[in-house]
Length: 248
Length: 315
Ligand SMILES: [Fe+2]
Image (cartoon, rainbow over all chains, first blue to last red; front, side, top):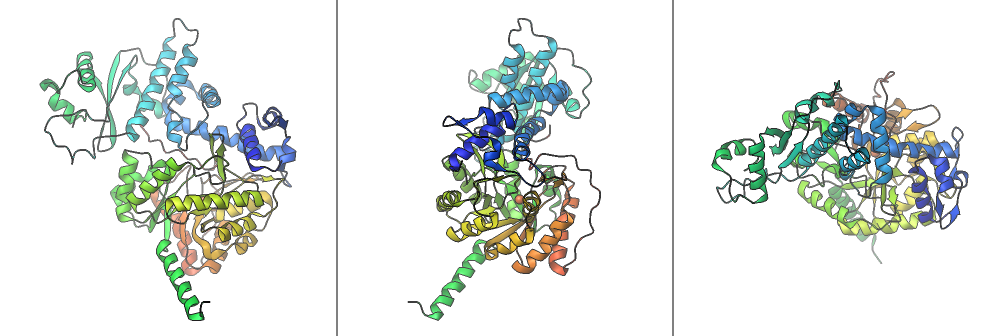
């Protein structure tokens, strides 16, 4: 095989194949043709052609799962290494990266978990719902950290009216994730917390992500203000929401 | 026909341009999120920083704020992992546009990436994959370098990758390929001496022969890093001290090149900033008095994945 395009298509087929590089080569065809690894890759004195391309196969899955482990560290500790790997691996097979950036890679992981865990479940178990809450929470944290904030808008703001910060994200969860996530991420996971309806708002101040618990009524009013149902910030919350970065 | 005086004057101007475009920066460190706060608080004395471009170009949060702060105080170089210059997929101009925006924002000294490809048919492996080294690839890469540098309006700097395999269709050595690539395009070279060493072990060649065969006048930067020797092969992990053999290669190489901006990369098991700085100062000591550092004999090395690329923050 000599054509550059063919070699590249073949190699991506082989190194991203779920059953390993050798079976990957057997099951990858380019223009209806199969190539065995030895016909494309030279051996070295110490490694066979299969072992050499195997390094890239291992690297592909290990590298991307490692990225998941950093972003979803609480989830990793809650699920345990084996189950986490299982989900991350299957996710990669279903949603390989198509972007130049790794930031997008974990975006669909919470919804993937939701469809995988709750598939055929008429009455999901408590631990499944907790896992989904943790995944949503960790992804939201990443997005608020990297997303738009109001830090650079302060200088150009013309009116005195409080406006909602572009950073804020509201999450309605079934478990008190914010109160225990720090603990989980520190490898101190021991048991799932008891369910508790938890309304959170994620804000950002001086580029630091902050998460606050809101009472049900306050959460509903903030939702209304954020979506424009209320055209200005209610007086009761003006001071607090400014102080916690909900508005600016 | 040019007179001798005209020729030497234009050569002088070329050298001046090169000086201006690729100034000597000294001894720098790869900027990693772990050290953001330390650098902002302590403003450590270090000559320059190199960023992984992808970790900043899309950020509208803390990373972007940090790089603006750092760029006010230190020279910054942009080093990317996603250009995929050797891929047969179309060039991603949206990505290049973002590089250009950031380059202006932080007044980047230069923009570099790797001689590799990262994916095809739209699928990105996020790995720096090796290219078949032959005339077909050479032509393809040279054409794409021209397109990219025209778009970026500056010469592209390309790094020799570390690799774990060679193709049956190779007809050129890596050093011949790189020499031809540099001669046929306007690119400059980022010579990663650890990568040379890693590949020399994996493919059984003499690393210094590789270095000597390159057009060294085109080398504008060195990379140094640690790796993991598995006995049968080396994985380029960037998770440890630079090995003695790479320091020796650096020592011999700078005798041929003279001062070249030198940068230490450390991407996994990243130590605290002062230890990182100590490691790059070993390069400075070699440069200033030819003194090789004490060899690190024991290290708690556990990583087996090459070049971790993620910078997600800790909650
Ligand atoms: Fe490098």
